[in-house]
Length: 195
Image 1: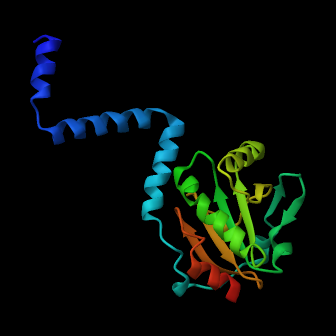
Image 2: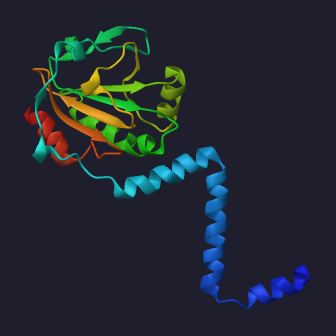
Image 3: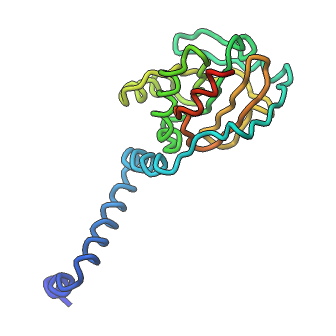
């Protein structure tokens, strides 16, 4: 069968079938380009994100060793978790290549914008800080980025990203979330401001 005969036969199919074929081809093309895949994937993930479940906080005191976690800012200043407990800390493991991380970027930015005075947001990246900062700036956000300098203890460790840990001023782990989360929800911001 020649190409012309195949095309004539294909044109006789239902419009819905042709449209679904076009959508499928478009999705395949999108999935072949890594930067498009990340962006489209993050949009899809954003549709299904939920707010953190603050009703079921399981407060656990962090051992002193956990509070020795150190990280460096973009300027090179070294911080230690235990020294930042003048207000709650949201510690988040994040990466530019992770579409779940990219999906929660607007929510992290909203949290930082609306409750930045009430919480330390620590966004830990395990890649080049300049690259991550450029990516976040390109998206129009301003977030504090850090590079992890010491190994996290068992309670602040995760094999998945994004992974976030909410720690109160007394060094208690209040919440652990993995996956894209709506950190900027009004309910969560109200919760942070009530701590």
